[in-house]
Image (tube, rainbow, N blue to C red):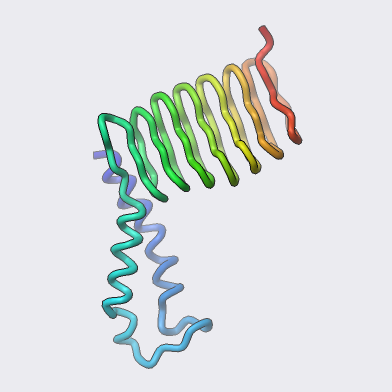
Length: 163
């Protein structure tokens, strides 16, 4: 039920952007009339956007292309919001990730990462990383906290908990 709410919320954020882009009154494209706005092409695009936003749940593991989700583990290409009991993984970026064990973004940016063990941005930047064992910023991060240690800015340097 929570993933249904997250889907509707994410899609309701994406749709106004799509409407503005697809609008016949857009300065970047010319439209003959307002009826073109509600054409089959527009409806097809809205359904594709919905399909890309929907989270698919397989035994608690949630997969989505560019939607928000909550589950045991969450995997996506780009996700505005991920909350996972175990792992939260995004390939091209995430705005908010919270995981019980590991949170990771492979390429791109992570706005907020909070995880039980480690936070990772493979190649990109992170705004805020919080973990108990290690935080790896990839290229750079603006704030990291691992255990009792914290630092304001890091460039290509991993922060690990003292043992």
